[in-house]
Length: 123
Length: 404
Image 1: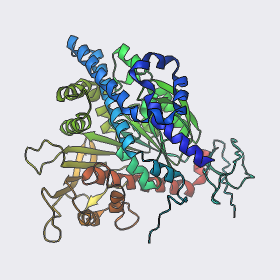
Image 2: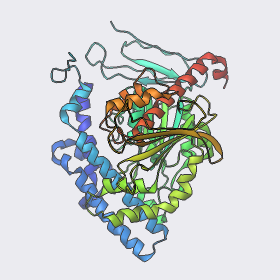
Image 3: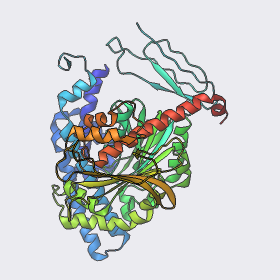
Image 4: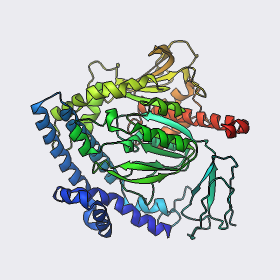
């Protein structure tokens, strides 16, 4: 039971990051839990989109920050805007790393090392 | 045969945390009945549940770093020293910043933000500002975990910028709090058994951020520079002063071996270790307390350009006596690593070559060929040593522990 649960639980981890594409930004705040549950039912559709949403967010936040700082370079708003850029860039790079690491066979074998596909022999 | 293991603790403050192995040792999954009670002895009828009760013997480690939380290389190395891989909690919020392994739980202090991203934008404060963080909640929850009580900790979702519903954190043997302000609040500082500050110099920070962000659409050299500059005042005012409180500081600077190097690939790393910290014996080279400068490359060991240079000596850091071990350059081969390791003393390794073995285990991590990975691994071993000493002192004096 836990092994199957482990499989289905793994995919939502990649998915939930897609719940904030620009088109649904406004909806996101109100129906956030709904959006998450919706995503978990359709794993294969959205797995690749994760960094795209984040990349666009990063690009937008940079534009916002540049605008905010054009008005007043030493204000709190300017600092907060660039801080947001930094946070989103960090999240984007983590998402990229995570994407690189998610090999479905490796994930399955982490949960089920004794199955035939995953047995390792040292000699 | 099925075996049940029960540890019981009689003290008033003890609570039992239950760890459920996902599979029984017989190889199939059984439904597990779990009893969770405070202050009384507990037995299980099912042989598959392990109940461990910690009577407040959680060791709390603080790590101050600017790199975002929980997924950092330092944490992965640290948890690997204790054994087991640290992973996000299964079945919980997928955007959780927490990492859990068998012995260690790492939480991200961003979870104690009192203002979410929109809130901070409205008020015009950065995440570095103490006004954006709830230190009272941080103190209460760290205190609770330290005394063995599970807590419901909020989650700060870095992707959406919102504060998500809380997750349950059970007291582990080693509890690591990682983030921007572990040592900012004096009450939280008192709870820390050991604290580390990761001090990246501005040039290296700039070089790393360029590597990280240049591939990102929308970023340019100017935007990266502007981002660092805009955060600098808050960083210098709130984050940087924490390094005077740290028991160990890992300082990362540009190399001195290559003149005018601005790529940030070769690094000079200094491990600044405070003297007089309980259960912590600084690492030294050749002779404790003397000043040594050492280039291991020569007849016995051939290194490629730019080579490796070590130095060790006593210094003062913000008014404290410290010992500084410094490494400049990078490792190219396994035998360089083992050669260097064999000449260092007080590493707290359990067998010859343990540091090298840990470095090899994670050869794909960044910093695996220079002082950052090397000193992070050594700090990991030191923390393990500290943990074992604390546990030994607690079991040696159980009456004092239950009275406290």
